[in-house]
Image (cartoon, rainbow, N blue to C red):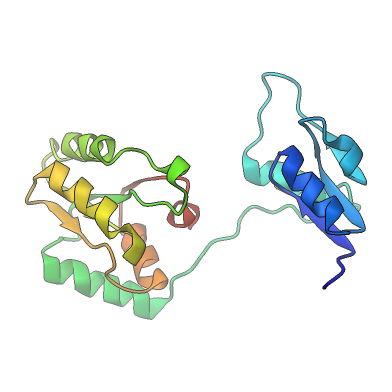
Length: 193
């Protein structure tokens, strides 16, 4: 059994804070929401009604409860690397996706079912995108997203829609997304690249 000196309670639920306390985390930092403030050793008040922060900004602000003047730079960027960028270019060229195309990358998968937007809605967005001349769809996802990506591709019924789900590694998928003019996806890993 491990002991932790510090833990950031990111999920805004009572259960998450209770779990940290029961696990014996010495210093527990989080937002005082859902009547869980007493479970935390360091808490920030929840924002007043009507005010919202991007989740990343909210998480970064928790650092201020522990450290003076923490670095809260959100400019992190994932770089897939030159090999992945070249592989994505070659894959798109092989599939007939021109560099001049107006590309919509779609990632309809998600690990949690409650985060899945219905495949037919993704397909409707894609059909509307294809109303534009020179528009192309690239559907991306991991091996576990094959059924969802397939349902979207089937709902589009367009010759300018390319199901690239399971095409390769994460860097390759990131490079495919980078080639797009617009990205539409669920709250999943690919959306955070």
